[in-house]
Image (cartoon, rainbow, N blue to C red; front, side):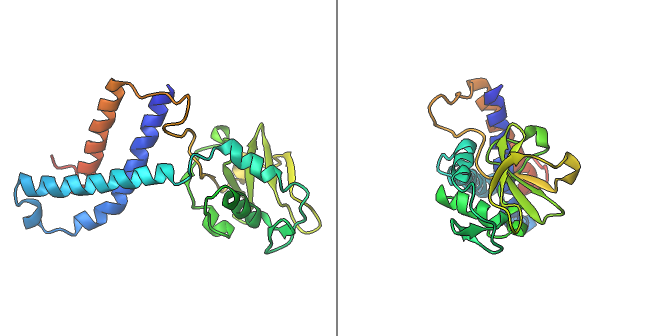
Length: 219
């Protein structure tokens, strides 16, 4: 099951990368596309390779950091006073806390909630949230770090300090949930290898996604 989840995530990452590259492919003329299987196949191969490379880069840019590591890093700031615009141990606001925690782990995220709410990948529901995920609430005016077990870490407001508390919001209050670090890191100890049959299916899926993105579904 884990392997299949990883495979689906891999396909999604590749599809996102191909979507970005497909704009360049769509600008090619019909003559270039129809110039022969050798030419179009070469172009397709290059673009697909670039997409796969981009997906690989995306999967490794977090350097193997886990969601639990994010939570642990955030816990170090418990008790730091809320300061609007602050972003260090002398005082921080909600988005300053998020940026500082991820920076401590070597990961860059935007400074403001408006940027942080589009970082990483979206998590479909609160039930699927994992430690380290970012949850945006209050009409996109507040952001918290999910710590697991229905608890969050956040910098509340003036007069309060960074706190580890029970979540007070419902699903309807959530604007978005973002996952910055992957659920599992490829190549780490204990990682489950994808079976050969699943790998073959993944390869076919990558090719199908590439053809659809670049040629509008033409085979």
